[in-house]
Image (cartoon, rainbow, N blue to C red; front, side, top):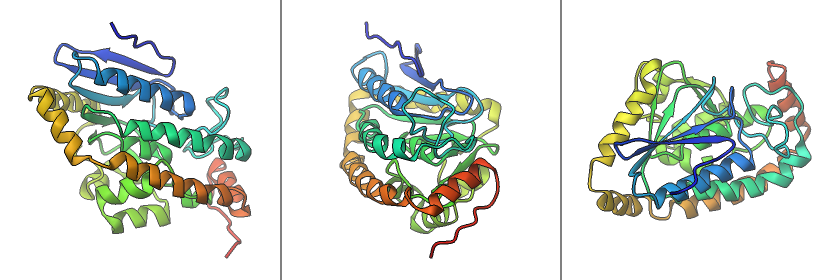
Length: 275
C-alpha cells in the first residue's frame, strides 16, 4: 500500500473513491518547500492509487493559506507574504528559495486526477496561487482572497500571472493585482474565482459531494478529458513563474519592498516613495 505519511499534510481515503488532502500547518498554513514538495508527492502517489478518483484539497486552522514562508523552513511563523506576518521577513532567503519552490509548484499542475478545493478561510498571495491548483473551488462568504503583492512592493508569484487571468478574465485579475485588495466569497463567486458558495460549516461537505460526483464517472474517461482540457497548463505556469521570479528578484531589493513588508506586518498603509 502507498505510504501517505507526511509532516505538513494529511491524507484520508474514503470509500467513494475521494481522497482528502489537508494542509496541516495551521493556524495560517504558510507554505514552504517542504509543504509544496509533500503536496507534489501526495498528488503523484494518488494518481497511481486506484482507490482515488478525485481529490478534495482543504486546510486546518483559520486560513486556507496565508501565503509563503520563504525562510529555511525551520520557523513556520516567519512568512514573507502572508496576512499575519510578524515583521521578520528574510529577503535573502526569499531570493534563494523562491525559484526552487516555484519549480515544485509546477508539479502540482501536472497531476492527473481532478481536484476540488474546499476554501474555508483566507487564501492570500501565494496562498491564492495554491487555491488555483484545483479544478474547482467551493467556498463561503467569510473567506477572503487577495493578491497582495503590490502592497508588499513585490511581484506576484506561484504562476498567478497566468492562472488568475485565465480563470476570472484580465480585467478582474488586473484589478486584484494592481490594487492588492481583499475580496470576500460573495464577490469571488460573482467574478468566477469560486464555483460554489455555501455556508462555512458546509464547505468541506459540498466540496466532497462534488468530488464524489466526479469520482462516480468513468475514471479513465475523466482523466483523459482532463488531460485534453488542461493540455499545456503546467508549461504555461512554468513560463509564468520564470518571469515572476525574474521580477521578484530585483523588486525585493527595493525600498518599497522593505516598506511594504513592514507596513503589512504592522497592519498599516504603506508609505511608498519610489516612482
